[in-house]
Image (tube, rainbow, N blue to C red; front, side, top):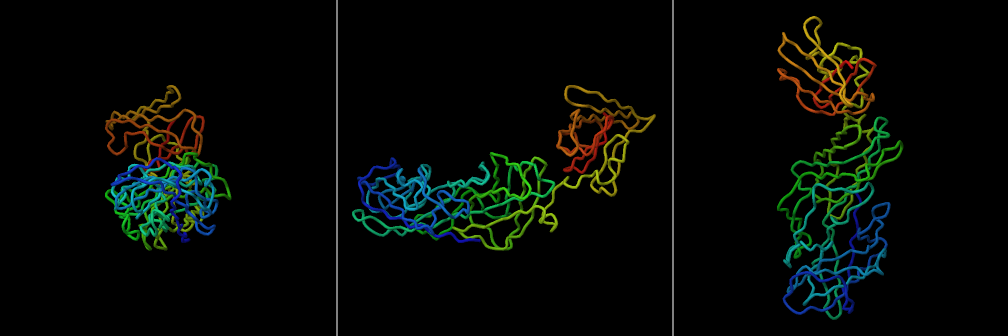
Length: 409
């Protein structure tokens, strides 16, 4: 964990127009500008470099500024400060300044004592990019006067998690689609109030979630020897010893990872989460259903059409199979799908299963199962893995339901 340093803001009385002031005022307003002086060792995290600590202010950055007689006024960054470690902000406000928060939000309300903000549990970002809208900071220690300006120190309230996903051999070439983080009974995201009178106060949630789901807009392909970077902000509610559940969504199925937090996450801190899938699987902290294909066992050696229980690949047992001279089956193709129809007059059931007519071994395909009189075989559409294919037969595994299908083609 790396502690991030805190930026110092200087508010001076320069007469320069800024972004339009939004808020509630109890008197006439005056023009005030804000100089954010940041040394190279004091990042604001408004934009981040490769190490997630080297940062500069960025055009569009705004502070929400309040005082006794004014609430939630926007102070915006001047264009010439874009990309600089020391940024000049400006805006109008009535009376003395008492607090500021970052980033400014029009929906934060007009309460000078608290800003109503949100850190959503569902987000979409590109891999390696940081959504700075959730890097919340606050200051309640304004010093100075409207004439001479103010000095304030901003304190970070969010924490930054940085996941790096290094694929194992099975996942090389697959696309990484999403990451879900779940820490039971911890408030990681949601709607909250940011205290503008006590910058040491924790975020006060009115509605919260114990998970954050990140969807990767670029769905990067995972390559051997490289890692995919996924940084994002959340409420620093993770404590040492907490159970952490991570689900990676990939084009080859989901990866389930279970870890324990070895540190307590602090506001303004960054916690690194290197996810070396090969090492985690060997340590039995990660599992990938289907990563060890059942073709390594005896399943493709079975040729009797039907549905099998494959929860134990060393002891595969039939559930419903074709019985010669007792049952009837038919195989037909319609469109891009191949259908297998099994009818048992003696058993009183009908099973119809469809799969793509040209499945690729090792790939996930859609399997639709309909039946009459079979309560223990689901009637549903599932993502299943094609284990093997011949000109006359296909073998498929429904990993979620521990079912195997042997289907004539």
